[in-house]
Amino acid sequence: MPNDILASVRRLSDAELVARLKSLAARERETTAELVAHVAELDARDLHLRAGYGSLFVYCRDALHLSEHEAYNRIEAARAARRFPVILEMLAEGSVNLTTVRLLARHLTADNHRRVLEAARGKRKTEVEEIVAGLWPQPDAPPLVRKLPAPRPAPPAPALPPPSSPLAAPVSAAPPPLPPPVPAPVPPPTVAPLSPDRYKVQFTIGAQTLEKLRLAKDMLRHAIPSGDEAAILDRALTVLLAELAKKKFAATENPHPGPKTAPGSRHIPAEVRRAVWQRDLGRCAFVGTDGRRCTERVFLEFHHVEPYAVGGEATIGNVQLRCRRHNGYEARVFFGREHPRPATGNSVRNEFAVTPSTTPAGSSSARFDPGGTRCGPPRAGPAADTSAPRRGGGEP
Image 1 (tube, rainbow, N blue to C red):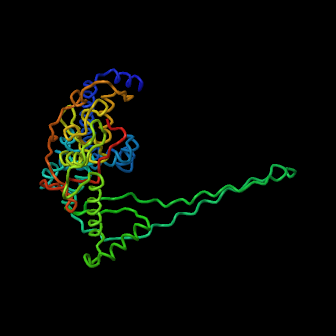
Image 2 (cartoon, rainbow, N blue to C red):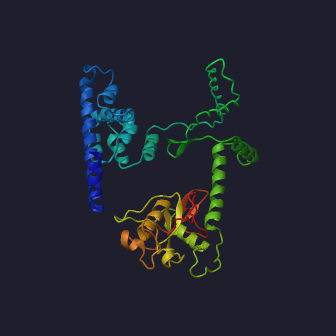
Image 3 (tube, rainbow, N blue to C red):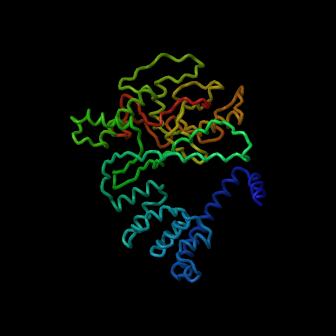
């Protein structure tokens, strides 16, 4: 059966595949809303207790075969939907998802639920967490530096079995090497909104980094008498961003034209990199067939719109920012899966995507302000970002 499904899917055209996928996603949203409504009614009638299950969670997990995460999300949504039925409509149309409802459920009231749910429409989890922080602000987290537990000792090596017979000659062998100590689990980095414009950041650092932090705190006592780690981190990141801008884009307050690039050279001059970064606002400039521009800002690369292999020059008009995946995608579309080097060809964007103007849709000339981490009016010196573009080996 699964093979039959895959075989039927492979026979679909690109347009049919996308249309079918969207239809299935819409059907799943409607089914989820219906499931949540049924769970809410079953909870109201206590049918899970009548069936012998100790809780609604156990019923969803064991009788409906939902995972723990799926059961928890649906129960929270069901109980919120009993109070505010508009949630079911928004789930069915895809305006909110189960995670959004779970995060907001305990903060919804008769007075604010429509306003809050509308504000969460189409938002990602991190954005919904910021809405929650506005509804229920928390105090700033106190600075904390503590040493993590030492690695646990390795378990003892198993004893060697006794010889099979008393006449067997003992075999001299080196004892097996002891396994390395088991490292203590390291908690993952955490970025959690506490209140509007205030965040808790938690991560693990090494001894050398801690020593650098302490040294910076001592050296900045004249400027930051309190030794506030957050203020020190902000200063350090400001300096780092300015340094990255110099390194990746030759950023400078007084830019000047560099030496002319030889015709046919693959080298992208510094003034071109600066101008491309400012124009594309430090994010991928790929525009899909439906006019949607990619939002990626990490692993960016400089991309030749007219590929270098067919004569594309490293000019401002022919170079754009691409995330690594879209850069590789355009190379595969133009050159084929094996990246052959055609003798002639047209820009891939003329065939497979909407061609943006010199300035991609939704962007404008801007600068990056390392001190304020925001875009503003143009000035001498280009923008910069921690997701600095590079010329990747797969650049077409």
